[in-house]
Image (cartoon, rainbow, N blue to C red; front, top):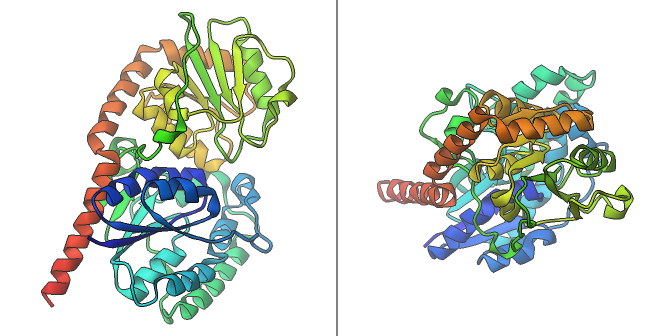
Length: 404
């Protein structure tokens, strides 16, 4: 059995798709070491992984506000920050007992990709959002919407400079930015059905579209649909962009007196009491067992994060997508184009929200499309297919080594 290391962004939308893969690999007897923060240690340990913990420090002159501000040129610098510390931590952790494979997050590929190159082990890249390759790049799709900021060229030059320093420190001097940042790895896992991916025909067999990976989350609990025969609307803006009391109030107003029962998940950033008096048909929680709620909801009012979108597709729940940042705008347009739901602008009023929810529930084309996409998601294989692909890479590496 092999030793496999995982490197990901320490955020729910990045960690969650890998939980089922970790569970599959450990159940098959593989040893998994996961580099992440303490926030995810307990869950990963329960799945059989060993967690190598690190703390996240603020990036100088960069902040997560770049995600919402539209200054996309700041993001590579933000994610490069602390990559050298991850490399040093991994070197110390593994010593001479290095893993046979590294699975790393494309959003912040630096430590995982550098270590795979340095150690000569098998490399697997995963995409927590839409996949990128030489024929389609999510960053390009986002830049088409935002345009280049005035700081774009300066940020790019600074990134090239810092990346060169990082690569030299990681023992990879002379490796150019373009070569190192190539989107295509020897194996690339995308946690979505191929049918959802834009420009899907440009991705070759080394890109595996395994669909939603929802395993490893049995501890989240269950939710019970309220009594009565009316439809249920589930409202959530995910774990990052949920500080939006005004939006939750608009949703409560939208559904007040309607046929819908409403369950809201407002996250840790919004105090439910701050929403004021709410209609009796609206229940509010900081968190809910989302998979359980989606399995019973009739419509999902969502920000359109990739994780939430895939979870909705897995349960054939139509969506009303209210994107909060540019990546979610790309996803929202894909949802609308495939007739999987309705897109709304973030400032949509209560009447528009209610009309969109009713359309999502009653439009026959949306119902047919969500049912068809759920079948595509099931056929893609999820965490099991991802684990199979990782094991295939390990066999390829073993065969290559034995043939030398």
